[in-house]
Length: 361
Image 1 (spheres, rainbow, N blue to C red):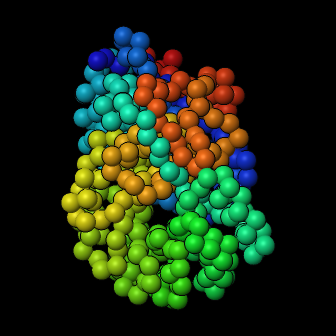
Image 2: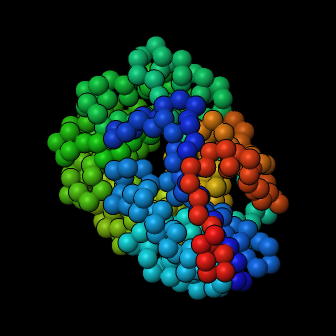
């Protein structure tokens, strides 16, 4: 299969409401979208959003990388492009993943072919801060069908503990609770938070300290009253092996863009299972493209609620045939294949470059 054209776009997608994590409050997503076409008319789509502060990559470095690779790949085979991208995953994982995903969709990777209807449960973040508002939000989310709620922490330990307690009181055994510090604590803060937690209804505590602070995260895991899950620390199968050796770390969180595409995600999930680790998958700041792919690749590996809920946060959907969603679940139906809404794509585009027959157009 020969690549005939690649278009690199960046979009700005306003959110329905602010999305707050320990290091930033999002009001919009700014994904880079890859459209890859073959000579026989097939089209593939990939994306990568590079949140400032979450990785050494930046939006601009990812943009430059995608443009450079696109100029090299037109006129070449998909297999040749994939070989180059695979070699660059460690240095530019987010940007490489955007292009690898487009290639996987272009060639209709078997992992994306759904033959049996499947429901992929999603978790939902609780955004309110005050006790009464939290109770109302939890009740609304339960009525909508969600069975797992997520509490963002990583700011002030005492306030975070109080807020988790409000969510526990509101849930009252009717749903599972997960918590995510998004690397917001230092070692002492993480230990104080994790060792003080009432484990009632709590399924896991995610990424207390910075990604490369393995000793700090291990110290938190040792004293935590609930299982610890590492997210940003997991960038390779070697990281999975390292996590599996830490007492108290029972789970890992994988994102397509962090591990580097469909095949690497499948390999990483198999490795985690071999190492006795449970798996969460999904990107809360992705559009329908990555969320659909993550739902497909996770369906035979993951049983707990996924984090591939980013597509529900913007005001618009990218698919003309929106990703099926019902009562807190992505619904994968046999024969479903997404079509991009080009009107929405154009309305939210902030820059684009088109590459064809080896030239920039």
